[in-house]
Amino acid sequence: MEKKSLSEMREEIDRLNLEILELLSRRGKVVQAIGFLKANRGIETFDPERESLMLETITSHNRGPFSDEIIQKLFKQIFEASMSLMKEEVTQEFLFSRRRKKENTIIELEGLTIGGDKPVLIAGPCSVESFRQMDAIAGFLVECGVKILRGGAFKPRTSPYTFQGLRKKGLEILRQISEKYDLIIITEVMDPRHLELVAEYADILQIGSRNMHNYELLKELGEVKRPIMLKRGFMSTMEEFLYSAEYILSRGNSNVILCERGIRTFERWTRNTLDISAIPILKNECHLPIIVDISHALGRTDVSAPIARAALAAGADGIMVETHNNPAVALSDGDQQLSLPEFREFCRAINIM
Ligand code: PEP
Ligand code: MN
Image (cartoon, rainbow, N blue to C red):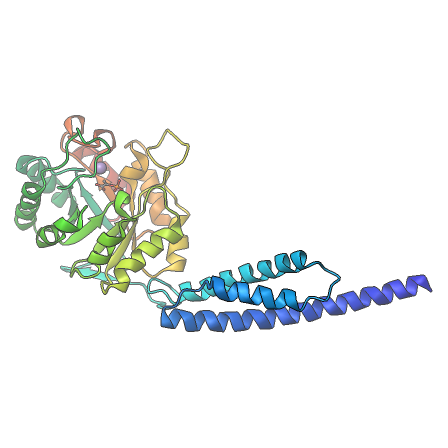
C-alpha cells in the first residue's frame, strides 16, 4: 500500500517536472522574443529594476513550503539563464555575425582579394628603418610573389626608450616603396590623432594588439575609407575580439580583417601562444577574413613553416610574417624576423604563392 502511494507520488513528481519544463520553455521563448526586440531597438538587455520588481512579486505570492530565500535563489537562476538566451539573441544580430550574414566578407584591393579562395601572404619587416632597408626587402619580396608589404612607422614598444618608429618619415618611405614595386601597404595606426595621416599613406590600416580595446580609436576607424586589420588583444577572449570588430563595423566600415597573433599564457618557449582553435571558431561565428600573424605569435623563426601550415589548415585566409634583410641588427623584433633566404624557403614550404 505504502509502496503504491510512493510510486504514485513519484509519478506526480514526474508529471510536475514536465510541467515545469514546459513552463520554462515557454518562458524562454518569450525571453528570446524580447531579446530580438531589444536588439533591434538597441536597448540594454539587463534591466535590474525590472528584475527586482519580478522578484518582489514572486516572493509576495510565495505560499511555501520553500522559504522566500530559496524561491529567490531559484528564480535568480532562471533570470540568469534567460539573460544568456537574450544575449545570444542580441549577438546573433551583430554585424559580424555569421547568422546575420552567411557569405564570407571578401575584401578587394587593387586586384587582390582577402578572404577569397586563395590565401594571401603579408610580409615585411617589423619596423620601417630606412629607405635602403625597405628597398632591399621589398625588391626581394616582390620576386617571391608578395603583394602586400608590412612595416611599422608608428611602433608600440614596451619600453619608451627603445626605437619608436620613423613616424611620418616611415610612412613616406612606405609610399615610395609602394610606388616603386606596386605593393599594397599595411601599417599600424596607434592613435586617433594620427589616423588621417596614416590613412593618406597606407592601403590597409593595422590596429595593434595593445589597441584592440581602444574603443575611441575603433569608433574613428568606422569612418575611414580603408580596410582595417584588427589584431587580437593578447589578453582578449574571442568574444571581446569580435565586439571590438563590431565597433568598427557599426560605424560604417565593413572592410574589417581579423588577425590572430597569439595570446599570453604561462608558456615561455614562444612569445605568445597561437590560438589555432580561434581560427575555425571565429570563422563559424563571423563572416570576416582572418589572417594569422605567426611572427608575433611565435617570437622565433625555426617553426614558422609548420605553424603557418597549421594556420592555413585551420582555415586562415592568409599569413603575416616578419622578414628583414639583416635580422641580427633589426631595430625591433630581431629574433622573430626571417632573413630573406629563410623567407624564400618559407614560401616554398607553405606553397601558397
Ligand atoms: C606588429 O605587427 O607590428 C605588432 C606590433 O604586432 P602586435 O600588435 O600583434 O603586437
Ligand atoms: Mn614586430
